[in-house]
Length: 607
Image (spheres, rainbow, N blue to C red):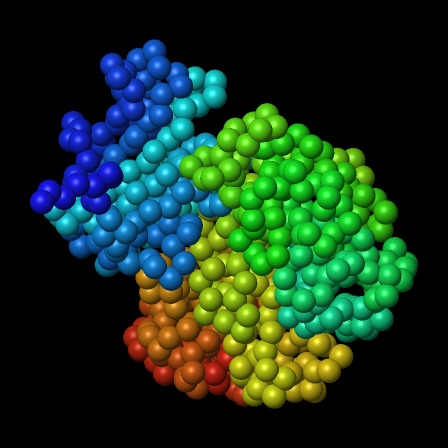
């Protein structure tokens, strides 16, 4: 008996290719998948540690390409990519697979060593078309490989991959790629108004779909008093918006029972000083919607969420429908913007799927179709809001550089009650965020939990814009005090947290020691019991946040001995200690309550 397979299991079983040195120990082979067509590549140094790989073919403009990169394992510890989730160590090359597009991630990755130094960092320059990625450890060759399957460029231009040379940390290498994308015309970010950087109140976890105008207005008053500047009305405001399925999606009309005058309701909330966004999933179509009969021919693929189908954005009728729908909502009700959900469901029409060749489509690639749709949508909405205040929230996985022109609030994926998940996902999102403000998932907590558990949720969302989603009108005095303190601290520290250089450490360590630094200030959040470096020479204003379960921090002072004002606060903001210290270089134990913080301010030379 003979065994046969239709496709290779490992990369070592692929047809051989000629490898050549690329950079920093990485070797490369490029292949044109067409008979008698050759492929050639060049690398151009861009400066600041970046290089641009360009691949051309001999007379075959519409030829698919394969780029193979290989690097010796050495002391490799992990491989990060935007869709890594919790799998951020090394995988075998028969397991590492992803297909990305404009609305589902980006073809990018970073291999790094145990000391954090990077060995291979790349991103495909065009984030729009579908790209297949194969990655992992080649067991046969003792190497880590990345294979990129690139679609033909529509205009026949060379395929491009931007590379970062070996850097001390993953964040450093990815910062270089992020800056490169930010300079590309196709990734030019839409304006980011002040509201995108402000704390948000969301109704989702607080109400789920059991939401009504009077309750939202009551929450809005408290949210505004706590420092929130934006309210997002999530799922449940629309007709047929009950139950956790999506069978009623499609009409997007306010429920007349719970929102009898939606426009007046929006005006009442905005009068509290809050900008108002409404949730919408414009590509979902449910059979219970009044428009289902008319739109069903344009939605042959079932959605990945229960009860709905997905409108095919490759059809011009669908793009026109989505643009009309979203502009109607903003114009009719005086909204400041939209939370646009489930755009990644468009991948039901990916190139290798069952619905890849539907009749009536005028664009074949999902990413290109979504680019046309979202460009038209942004243009139409900005005509309604020419003041530059338009807010559009996007969500993982469609928050990569290619989506920068289409959204300015980049929210990490749902992780209810999971402070660790929020920390990891927001820092992952920020790695390649171009232009927009990174937001955490909405925060919820047990109404009977101790105050330090409430603070832990806020600490997990400290290095992004927090979104609050609990019933504020029902908060205990202790919980409200905790929430008020941490929102005020976040606002105080926001210039450092969001505009500083962030170093979160190794991705496989789950970012348990995160430092943001800007000018003479730094903020370090600590999430595991480890030594915290404190450089009193480099910074005059140091804040250490205790996100551990211990009531102390172990710090290692570097630099010279300097006089410090040390203020320790607990999870509710109450001062526990306020004293002068001049710690000598070396290790020190600082009593800091769990979910509390200590502020260290250099007093030398101050009035």
